[in-house]
Length: 246
Length: 375
Image 1 (cartoon, rainbow over the protein chains, first blue to last red):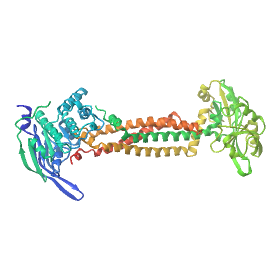
Image 2 (image 1 turned 120 degrees about the vertical axis):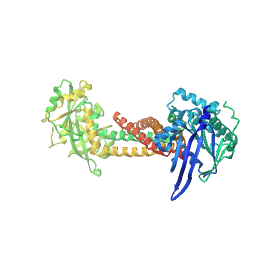
Image 3 (image 1 turned 120 degrees about the horizontal axis):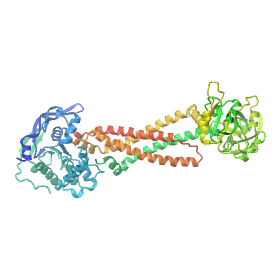
Image 4 (image 1 turned 90 degrees about the horizontal axis):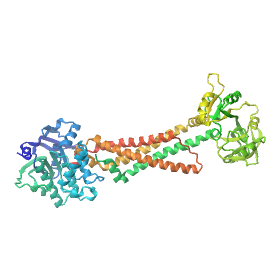
């Protein structure tokens, strides 16, 4: 049994009976209403649905960035509710990667430094940090652009740097929020391929929230959401693994 | 570790420039106002600083040179008994009332009676020997050129001082006093002007064979015991006492403290606003780092490091600015004086401005909430 199959055996993240409300002024709006979901490693799971359906909120709660009003979140066997802010930070540092719609790269740093920066907080040696950053750049196909700053990179390249920054930490859990919304179709295709490959190659759980219909064909599993509930849970078998990374 | 703080500062220097400038100008304002105040109040000690003696003997506990009272003539003998003392001369201090032209009414003046000899000590730095010699004429006086309009006379003309007719034999530069006009006469003329008063001098000034030993000699010559009838100071000591007295007597010292507080406040507001703006501009990047596990404390360290660099740059810029401004002031005869403790105090205040601003900017990081990146 290889690592990917082991990861498939039990869910990497499980949310049970999740309830979340948002209050604006005196109006309280339910966003999640008793939702339960389990996501496994080694595959790319897509949360799909119209904007406002609660997919970003679900992503925030499952990733430990936000706490649910009720319900339970278990990630890698840990009850996230039991962790305080500092412990959650520690958990995210060791196990979680994020890719956001806005690439959020520091303008002053070149591509490799963007990736090395969060690795510094893991307490890795200089040499290890450098090696991991180079590997991650290689994985997203940007080795040649390692010394370029965000201003010199295209939108798709920036998003690939952001993905490399998340992957270099070697997280078991990778969350991506609308990673392709700001990109043209070719760049979007590249980005989703990279995410898909990361899931297959490293057994990473990749959970991606997006209303981009182009992504559906590339996901292993699609969770269709509407009004804070999951309407459909579709598995898309991909019998042929995609090409290994260059 | 990637040097995020430094790289951001260098790459986005335009964003941080206003903060460094605010720090630089705060430093310059602090230093220049200090230099001006010390420069102005140094003139209270003009009698000491423009004289050649290293040792002064005066009434016990005198707080400022203009508050001197007559002392025993024994002091002269005691000073001369020390083998280190090469020369001693009296310094007469008389308060005067001047009447020049009728249009100007009367003016309060300080009369300094000095030894007119070519090797005289008092005012030796501002009255050259040839001019001093003219004081041998009975009733001769010398004043600062800038005081002529106040007295309403020209060289060669005369006026009434303490009821006695005196005539102006010459003018000089560097005699300006704080709060009155200095009139220099010979010891003999000063005694006549003080008719009916105490004829003994207020001070004795001594020149030492080795000026470097002033502190030791002053300490040895200062009579201890409760019955002492005079005190002995080094020239620097008496000058410092005088400046200190005027600083606090006039409230100028409090003014300096108050003004420093205002500069501190303004500097901190501008610097912190700039740093906060810089942090706010990178909030989503900081939030992403936090999402990836960097603690708020670690992010705060980045902001504090930036504040420290901004402060260092501002300190260097402020030092340069101050040097230029003080050089210009000095070249235009604006009285300025600066001391090492003054510079250190200003530098400490400037660093306090930047560190406080940095702490205020760190508070902005609270808004770096990664959940906000997921709308």
